[in-house]
Image 1: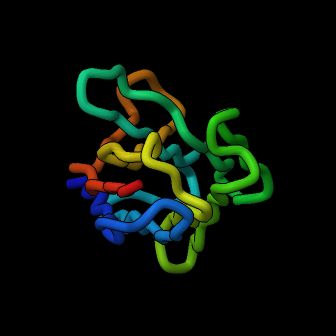
Image 2: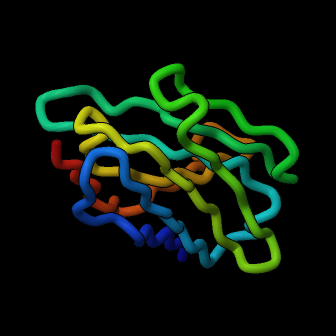
Length: 118
């Protein structure tokens, strides 16, 4: 059974930093591209960052570009999201997603809350 477990969320002041982690089990981690999404109250879930299976390429939403960095450690089956210069509008539940080759071959974590106070 596949499990994705996010951690590292919390309450931080505007301008602060947090590092989210997503630990995966039950799958061959290196075969999955990984995404970070977020969902703020009353808003749709949005893709924040994505990284390739090898970790050599990552892309970011315009709203976080230059502030967030996504990385992965395939030996540890873990993906990270380093978030710097956080803003109140970054407040959301952050989810990691593993994306495989088939339409059904994707998995979600339960999410971790990030709250940025002004």
